[in-house]
Length: 165
Image (cartoon, rainbow, N blue to C red; front, side, top):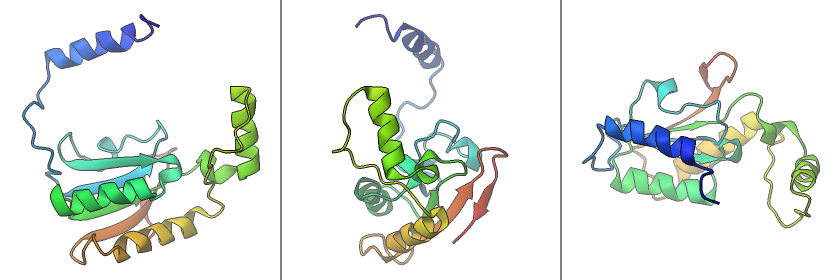
């Protein structure tokens, strides 16, 4: 399977030739932690005017706060300088557009294999899910009352954020 990544390795060589981020300490220097979707239309740092080293970025299908992303938020808040947390799902998200059965059928058709065991947490109501996720982060005992938490919707068609909670 060699050679399948040559284009990316070549691009990385160009990137590394002018690399300016060595020696960073891993702290979120702008104090931002954010959870957003894995969707490739979302540029988390750029959409907020941030640069590498400014934020801790956690991604999940649908931009949901999961057990893993919650762990990342706690670590960020307690150890890595996060003082503000943004939860940012987006418009036209596949996780909100289909039922679990429909999405699973698409996965099975694409894979040519059964996927009944795969959890696919679809989002019937994005705004309600966002409000629940914001509340869960705000109420988490290891996040702390001094951490500001907000919920936002990112519009993949115009790049704008709208604060929801």
